[in-house]
Structure formats: structure tokens, C-alpha cells
Image (cartoon, rainbow over all chains, first blue to last red; front, side, top):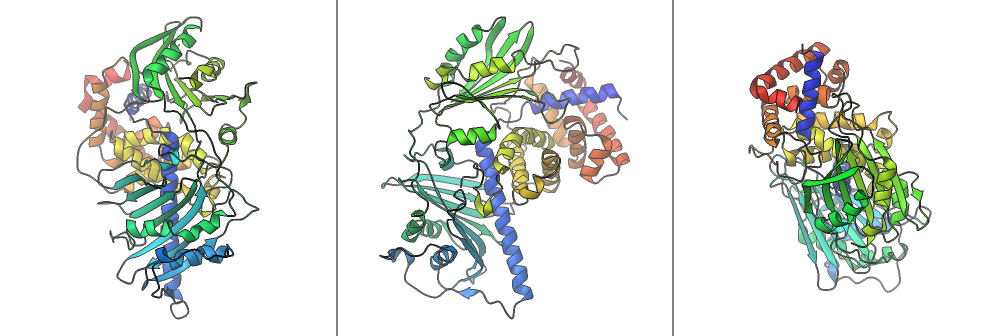
Length: 404
Length: 176
């Protein structure tokens, strides 16, 4: 049995190892997690649907899709149709290849009483040749002007080599297609997703998830999914969603050296604080890492500056910031500021530190994280960070971040 | 689709899921990084997969006393059940580590991760839960469905092996 001191030693060793873990862009990472969660939900639904079909085989017959003209050749009706749950499901069904069968379908129309609810349709599809998948189509708005650097239109999924693909494409008419695939050797998750975003901010996305993990080929390929999301029928749905908000395009994330140049005078204004740039990391736009020393103790500071934070989402970024950070302070100039003490996942880890975030009036989000100092007062535990949360709040809310 | 708002999200989306995922991302990746013995790609993959598993039941999970602890358990189980997706021994160590600078040699930490990777998966999970997540023996046993005595013996055996393999490097890392 290891002694308590050996256990303490090993805890420190593990913490040292964990420091090499990659930094993940948390927002995009969470978005990817949500996508994976949706795929899992879809797989579960098709599983349930299959079980129901077996139990009630005599009574439940999936709808056989008839031969018909290609959906792309169909123009929307001159008279606006009634966009209800059935419209959502029927439209998706009508866009599938003839000869297959659909089952377990549901549609959800826009609901004025729940304005945040995304209209969608989902169903199980069997192509009759061994290919079975679950489809989820959803409709939403993206703030205009639509730019390829919008967070929602970026590729991000952790890449296990050979298992994930992502293909963003701008089209001549100003629309964008983002195609992502997942599933490779050893993966039990084969899926394909196509998101189609028009220049006016209308977004139609379809996710296809294999209902049979052992079958690598999905019944609908990228071209077919593209045909589905670009079908003109979906434009009727947007009539009840309103107009996509318009927000100024975000400027590019500032280069690390410019951020450092802006940060240095701010820190020099704090009494007793010295900036050590010998291990500065400036290799990613919008992010730098520096050592900060005060009274013989050193903390590491990570600064992120994100112009146009969440500008592409329909929801006002200020509302989102307030929701994420509970009750941020609102400064006279409209800047929202939040600071917290993070204890990390466990009391003894060095995972703690101080966090501060600000959303400037121009939409730039500034984030600071200051880790505990590497020198603890008792020589055993990490010491407090060398700046206070108030000092961090002053740093993140400095107007300079909106100008670089 | 936007689920950052209070009501958005496909499937009637769990409203606070995205916030939770953002808040847990870094810690889960670091835990996974240790579990995988320093495989950065796989660590991200496992951590995200674990969060994805919470998504469908988020309404229930969000009402738990400790959703973060539940996420950790899901991550460990995901790690223990994942199929080896690649045989390469590649380790990514040149990423922009979101980490405090330390005076010690990064090579020591890479060596640690290499030795960690040589341990049986369940031993690694025991070590990570006990000494990174700071769980007690009983909690670790419950999370891994082992007996407390099995946790103690695995921890003891794994630590001894790490000490042997790392030699003086162990002390260099523990007391820089």
C-alpha cells in the first residue's frame, strides 16, 4: 500500500503529465459533443423503431416511397402551404429516393409559443438494399452577413485519423455547404451531415446516422443529402421564423504579438507585477500565454480575444453571455464582466485558478485564465494566483481589446 | 443548430447542455489524456464522446447532485470500453498546451505518459480516479465496479511499476 507521501508525490506527477493535454476550443468542442449526442439519440430512435416493427409486424407497415419526379425539379407551390408538423415530415419524405421505405417519422413545425424551438423532421429510412439510417432535418437562422469563419460553419470534431471528414464549401451564389462525416475503422458511429446556409441566413441541415453500425455505407450519399437541404420547399418554413439578425462581420482574431503589446502596459500598471515573456506562446491567433510574477511567485495567464463572439447565432450574444455567466456586472459603457474562482475538478489539483470574461460593446469576448502559482506558501500546495479576480476583471474589460 | 439559448436544440434540446459541456471540456480532456497515456487525439475523442452520451439524458442528469462526477464516470467507462482505433504509438506533445509553465523538462512528462500508457487500462483508470480526480478508494471502486481491495492492490501495483520504470525521473517530476 503506498504511503500518503507517495500518494501525494504521484498526484503531483499526474498533474505534471496532465499539463501536456491539448487545449481545446471549448465552444466548438461542446458543439461537437452536442452533434454526437444528437447522433446517439437518432440511433436509439431507430433501434426503438426496429423493435416496435418486429413486435407489431403484422400491423405496422412502413410507407413505401413511390416513384415520382425528382424533388429538385419541383417548385414550391404558388400558394403558401400550411407549414405544420405533417408538412415537415411529408416534405422530408418526398425528397427521399423512390423504392425505399420510411418509418417512425415525426415532424415539428415552427411554434410561435416557443420561438427558440427549431423546426425539424426525423424518420427512419430503409433503401431496400441493406442500407438503413435515421435522418434528422432541422431548420434555423444564422446572423447575416454569413461568413465562412462563423463558428457554426467551421469544421470541428476531434479527429481520430481516418474517422472524420469535414468539407466546407462556398458556392457562387453566396451560400455555403458544410459537409461532415464520421465513422471509420473501429467506429460504431457512421454518419454524414450537410448544412446549407443561404446568404440571407437561412440554414437547413440534415444529419444521417447509420442504423446498423456494422454497415459502413450509408444509404444516402453527400449528393443526395445536398439535394435534400437545397430543396426549395424548405423556404416556406422560414416564413414563420422571421428574419435572421444582421450583425457586423467580425474582424479577424488579433495576432499574438499584438495582444502581447496590448497586455504589457496593462500589467505593468499593476504594482509589483512583472511579465515574463520567455515562455510566451503566441502561435494561435487570438490566444497568448505568458508568465506573470509577483512577490516571487509565478502564475500562468492565458488570454483569449474573440472578435464577433457568437455573432452568427440568432440569439443576442449579450443574452447568451449573461446566461452562461449567470449574473455578470454591466459597466456603464455596456461591457459585461464576469469573474470566478475555479476550484477545478478536485481540491488537491492545480486545475484551479481564476477566470474572468468580458463581452465588450463591439461584440469582442475577452477571456482570461490565471492559474495558481507554482510556488505554494507551504511548499506543498499550489499558491493563490498572483492577481486578484478584481484585477483580472479590469484587464478583460479594457477597451483596448476592441481595437486590436 | 443553436442550442446555446434557453430552448434551442434538436430533439427539443437540453437547454443547459452546451454550457455544461463548455465548462467541463478542459477537465475531461485532461482526464482522458491521462487515461490514454498521452494520446491527444483519442483523449479529445473520448471526452467528447462521453459528453455526447450525456446529451440524450441531459434533463435527468442535470438534476443530479453532481453532473460533473457523472460525466467523469461516463468518460472512464467510455475509455474502458472503447475499441483500439489505431495501433500507432504516436503521441502528440507539440500542441499548444493550456498549462502553467514549469521549470522541469517536458521530456520527463512525456516519459511519464509513455509509462502510463504501458499499464493495463483498468490500472490506469484506478490511478487517474484516485490521484487525479482525488476520489477515495470506495468511490473509485464504485465507479469501476471493483472491490475496494482490488482498487488498493491495483493502485499499489501500478504505482510500484511506475516508480520502477521512471526511476529518478519520478522524484524529479514529483518535486521539481
